[in-house]
Image (tube, rainbow, N blue to C red; front, side, top):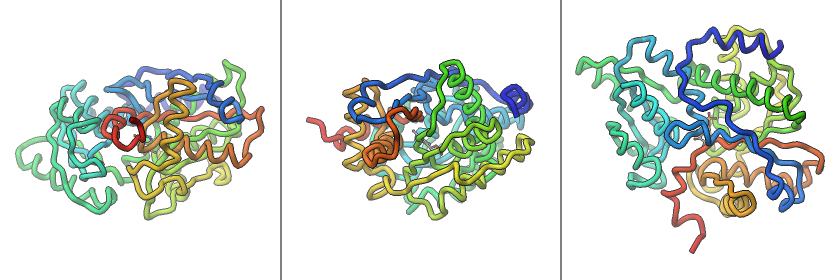
Amino acid sequence: MNREELEEKLGRLPRRSFAHLPTPLEPCPRLSAALMGPQIWVKRDDLTGLCFGGNKTRQIEYLFAEALAQGADMIVAGAGSQSNWCRQMTAAARKSGLDIALVLVSGEKGNRLQGNFLLFKLMGADVTVVELASIEDLQPAIEARAADMRAKGRRPYVVAPMALDTLALGAIGYVQAAVELDTQWEALGLNPTCLVLSGANMTPAGLALGFAALSRQIKLINISPVLWRQDRKTDILRIAMAARQRLGIPVSIDPVTIESYDSYVGERYGVVTDACREALKLAATTEGLILDPVYTGKAMAGLIDQIRANRFAKSDVVVFLHSGGTPALFAYAEDLGLD
Ligand SMILES: *Cc1c(COP(=O)(O)O)cnc(C)c1O
């Protein structure tokens, strides 16, 4: 289908606007030269604007339209204690006049009043911290918090981080982003061979679906920030298919257009690796480009590694998605190897 047809399908879904769009697409000639690599361009989704921005804002636009349509008077959501998701969700709730209760898994940085955790408190979210082995076990705790709120007469909209409905609706935000990228590439005369991103689920699923719908020949290189129980590529395709259903578009995705790597996580989610530190410093010193220590730093480490393995030609155009997360940097001050 063409862009207009896909935009028409997207336009049928309710959406509450929060993001400043389109986000910029910037060349990084000094980073490319330092790596003697392909032409790197950065899609600045760290600049979506809602409370320091990030990729969650595009996803939240569709989720909040649903919450408001359902007459919710508050949001119940959860993730890790330095969650970018919960930060942008809290800001969206405040901007919509809603309360928000967050259930947070005590992560690497615990509940130090820094980074995203500081911002939850500043925006007055009702925060509960739980000790769990994995974010994948968070669902019952979120449901329990929502039940408490219902017992008090509230009407919570529950954002279930692992529910397929939530993931599919959030992914639509990145189908829209694929349309936006396609428009920018055409205007600039760019024909990228790869898009590199830090993805867990909604972002790569939406992009894969959007590019397939537009018949864009591009490879998605997904660098996972976390080791999941389920194979990433299978899960990305599952979410993309659910999003396709929601949009009502007859598109199939060729699995070879997606590569997903777990090999840059390091010790575990949220723990900075040496390669991530190097990537953060290289982007900052060559381009003044600030990445984050949990997601985009590791994704850039993956891109650097693949450039050094001679995967790309100098003439290749590679787009790196900056998905945000930068407020967490301040919670990681001691881990960055600076003095
Ligand atoms: C959440 C997050 C991701 C992963 O996004 P998904 O939609 O879950 O794939 C990547 N980068 C940053 C900065 C994030 O906060």
